[in-house]
Length: 184
Image (cartoon, rainbow, N blue to C red; front, top):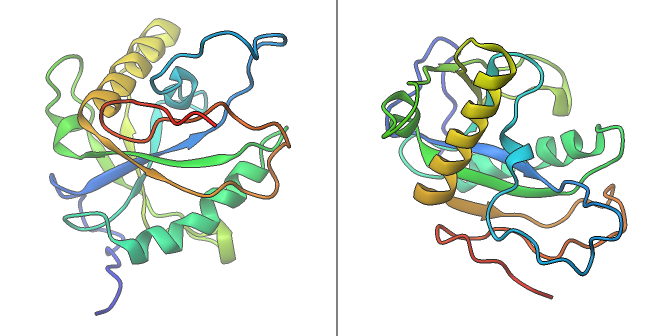
């Protein structure tokens, strides 16, 4: 069976699984012994580049492993592009209808926005949700709502770490819909 490739003008379906990339975030210096938060890090849901909340389309009606295989090297490359390389930990996944008709907060329209480019710069499966206007307060509120949607109603696709990441190991990361953590 051929890999699903959405057309550039094809709307995002209401049951499509969407994934937000999860990267490790630095801990406070000296906080290695502190108890860590068992949920998703809010910093993964704060969009600092504008009102377009970046997402990956992971399949037509369910997570498609061939699509994930296409996106995985792109996500690892994106992790290496941060000022200090990060580890790509996978995607927090939810269905489109959870964004366009959420139980709380503003409705977030989801728009297909494939990225043209060469090699790993290209992403045929890119989409974005449009965040509400309102400055920093609205941005923070949106991040809280998005994390809540993803943490309470979604799953997570775990991935191997990237070789470009800093050598420090994370204590663990969110792996399932009940937000439990693995401990080394």
